[in-house]
Structures are given as C-alpha cells and as structure tokens.
Image 1 (cartoon, rainbow, N blue to C red):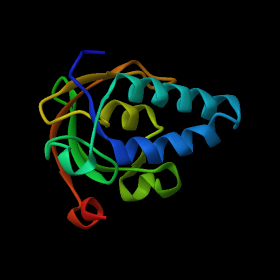
Image 2: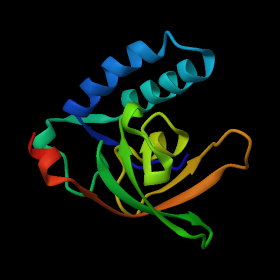
Image 3: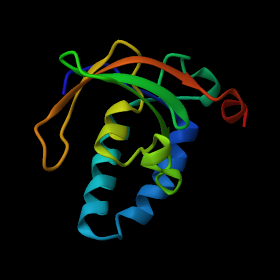
Length: 136
C-alpha cells in the first residue's frame, strides 16, 4: 500500500469500533475483515468530527475513483455494513475497497487486495460528504 496519511473522524472511529467488536465474533471472513479495518483505524490520526478536512473520506462520503492504469471511473458511497447495497453504489467500509478509501483524500493512490483477483490500484479522484449527515 502506498502511504498517505489517514485522517478519520473520532465519531466515525467510535461507530466503527462498536461494529468491529460484533463482527469479530462472526465467521472467519467477517472477523478477518473486521481485523483489517481495525488495523486501518490504528494507523489513522483521529480528529474531532467537525475538524475532519473536507477532502477526507468519511462514512457516508461519496467517492469517485478510477482503477489504474486508465480504468473506468466509479462513484460510490462509503457506508456502514448494514447499509451496503452494491446495486445502489453503496459499499461497506468492511469491503477491501471501503477499507482502502476511508481516511484518504482526493489524489491518493492506493493498492487494494481483493480476494480472487489481482491486486487493484485505485486513484481517488474526488470526494464529498452529505452535509446533513455531517451536521448530525
């Protein structure tokens, strides 16, 4: 993984930590995903939610990225696992791509290990957060 400083809101980290405790008691695949997300959160610098820079990907952020080199653009919303719906472009923060996106900013280049495929390299093109969710 190429290094870019991860910044995550303390509120998102708290919500995710509660979910991770539950997921670690699930079957092996879910427990492994929970452990991988916990590692990401340990790497991150936590900041108060209202101080999270606008360019950082948080829960409920809309993210546009492109698979490198020169792949197609994709827009997704990063969500809690219970809200995930691939058909609607809502990806779980527990998914390999979701874990790779959280805390990063536009311009970041990140490698993603997806089971059953060759590793992917994603370039984050842009992000925006839902203002109603941010104010909550």
